[in-house]
Image (cartoon, rainbow, N blue to C red; front, side, top):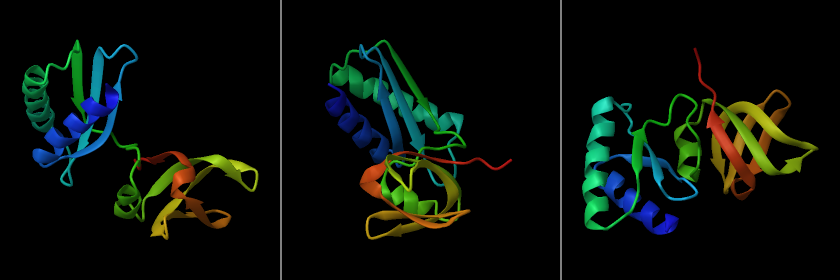
Length: 144
């Protein structure tokens, strides 16, 4: 069910001009969480627009759910796609790898971009090349 609903959400969100950052479906499928983004930043009206459109589409497509939440990804936005790592070059990120590099799985540094399907991160210890497929989790580090 999740893959079908996620594809449907992706089509609706991108059709409205937004980027689907993340999609969560509760274990019983009763709660759908949709995280959207747009270059200028997400407003409450953006969330309402996407929510209203998804509600209509879910009704037509007979998607059974109890609650739909649409929001921005927040200041600590997750980085999920290779394109995200290119877009946010120059920003500080936290990165967790599935396999350690030098006995370390968690890194913090300034994102340099992407080189040959690896994410380039400038850490205190120098440059780190993290293979994209080894990245378990990555998030922006908010600046206050």
